[in-house]
Length: 146
Length: 110
Image 1 (cartoon, each protein chain N blue to C red):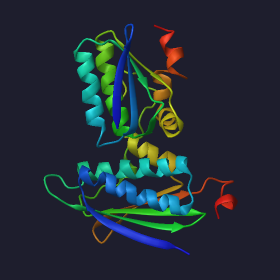
Image 2: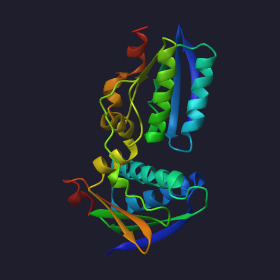
Image 3: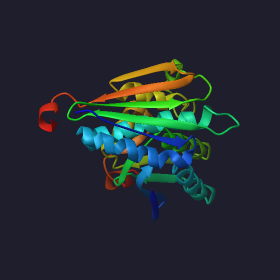
């Protein structure tokens, strides 16, 4: 049966640990192993830090995080903010082959999200940014964990 | 996150454990920049106990590497595990930096 829960936190760096712990507990409920859980944590951190830095310039705001797990199968994470409209998916891809001198970090976070999540969708809903991340159990592990 | 350092000849062996995320990365960067400011030129980052790193941590590593390079120093890595190894691979850091399987192998090079 689906298990749904959500939290709302201030859009600031001090909310990161609480947010990651929340998502991480759902990752474990879904049956993800440590490796997949760390990947989920990484993607959620990258999205949240982006919101913390850019969504509410010069003002305070909130971020809502909801998790819906289908144990043994997948985890759907929705991250919602009421900040300036921004489609994180519109960011360009980083050049991951540049050397130390030329290398830039911008764009790397969302690159991780694209690489590691099974589906990433951005939409505007009720004047809010909504990013949904779908993480599936790696193929071959479904039987073992279901 | 915890950082411990010891000197092996000219190499500052720095072990970092726990998590380098957006919260801890500034402390990590400041800590290593202090060593570089004190004259350290060859840094070996031992990551056996590092369980997690995000792009904020990679940003710090890149900043440290750039400063060291300008001083004709070097930053190398050893003992990357699981998720950290994967992040290095996906980001391309695995090919722009020198990475050794373990500390012993790294120290043989200096």
